Length: 279
Length: 306
Image 1 (cartoon, rainbow over the protein chains, first blue to last red):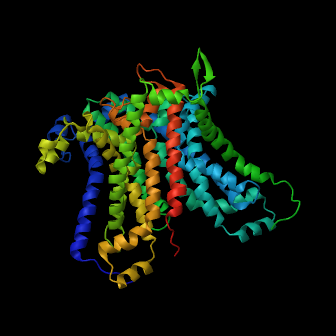
Image 2: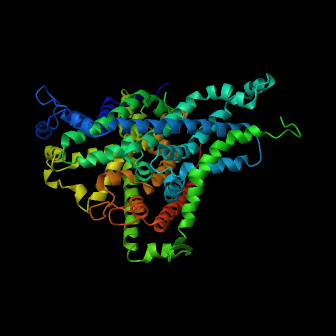
């Protein structure tokens, strides 16, 4: 492959620009974490310096962990996210299989119906969702959030997974049928394992908006026992506006898990967005 | 493999039913119910059909109209800033990242996309701290480039608050257009690029004349995603400026207006009918945007088959 080489000068400019923007993207987060580890004087006097032995302080973290119920917020977020993703993937894969495998009346129409939710945000129905959850006695339960997020995740899951399921070989499935496997066994034992990479992509995609959502926790589950980490930090940081140590520590605590997950899954995520175009 | 008179295939129903039920019950039916509620209001303590009266109130009544039109205008400004800053910036970054054999490309990509995975709450608070005159980070940096005189409490001034919040949102979301455009650029086949090079088209003119037309579908996709995302935005403004979208409502957009209206805030009581009316307007705006994209833009943009 012979590509026109770009001159060292131009490539220098490109690196300068990209590195410059990288700094802009990372700086606020780095600044927050760095200062969360300092005492109050150092936060204000030398905000741009790394914590040193003299200025190092965990006072913010101790304040936060003493007062806020962060562990339980994490637990709630984790339960909501994992269970919603599980159901969105399971139900989504089942529906995607039915839509891509069988020919039946209304197939295309049903596919279209299930795709509406990709473009129309579920938030627009909030007025009636709240009303329904009140009627069902589900306000301030994690179940309400799980239901909403499962519904929110389904359209994209079905859309992506049915693309992938179309590419599973028919011969394989027919061989299974000849061997007397039921349609359920064909789905769970033959097809599902083959689309696992696509499932992982969908999971990562679905996870971020669920974990970060503020709207539905605020409206459907604002109670202390059901607060998610996003809502928890929102309320919590609001209380500590003047305690800079605590605010910075709370922010850092909210950032860490996301950052760690991102470092682990960034390849998967980026490959998912770019649909395999990135080598 | 169509066998005549096959037995009823119950398994199809079993496969489809769970997704269909959850999706219909939690998403579609509430959406329809919300649209329906916008035509009803409480008259003499009872719910009654009022036709389009709620919309008349929203568009024309002095208690509602000023807030509504301001929120709508702000929302369009919010969207315009994203289209003018976020998407061109995303295209520029993607164009640089896609230079073949660029070193550190994977690192830049990962780092620049990072803010996108953070929650609006984290992003909002971080920027509130950085822009705060108390901490003095921003004045310090502006001093370095000799612009300290221009610093102000931007989030607190009605004239600059909306632009500032929009730019924070751009900072967070620029990763999405960058990635989608980047993928589109990478999927341009080498032959096309080589042919262009044989004709002596390189560098910028290659980008403008060859690559840009080929990534137009991706740009259309990015635009509609931005549109939908902006017209149901809420979290960032709620975090940075509160439910009242201050100062003095200067950052109020449809999402925050909807929240205050139907859920109530402080002294304001929740109003279900008017909430549903605002949600319906948002639905119609988003529907109009999506339809325009699907039938107007996407059909006309030529897709190149390689």
